[in-house]
Image (cartoon, rainbow, N blue to C red; front, side, top):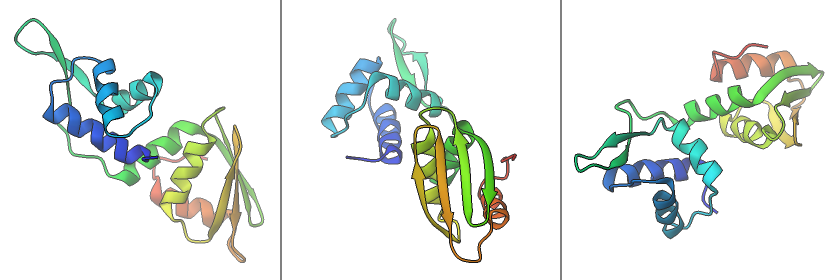
Length: 155
């Protein structure tokens, strides 16, 4: 199974190199590339990539990409984290991150990808993540390191 960042990059490439007129057409191309993706997921991907539709000059419309710098994977993970979490609390070497329902896997994946020093692992439920920290690493240390990765983060 291909990961989300690879899928986003492939969507960019398809829109940049082909005339894509609909989500259904884009889904067919993604399936040919080996992706299993729902229409709802594709819709979220298009929104994240800020894809628009523009007149094609012959009475139809096609997808277009915004003229902007390509976002780094870390930036995308930071955005996922900020969209999904609701609170962070800690005690000793355990951190509990509450999320909107269904967002914990995405937020935990972002944490894992950040490779924050002292994080031994994460366990995600439906709306909560447990972060286990190494010996001598406090929740306060974790939060400080997380804020270095996501400056927009508020407790």
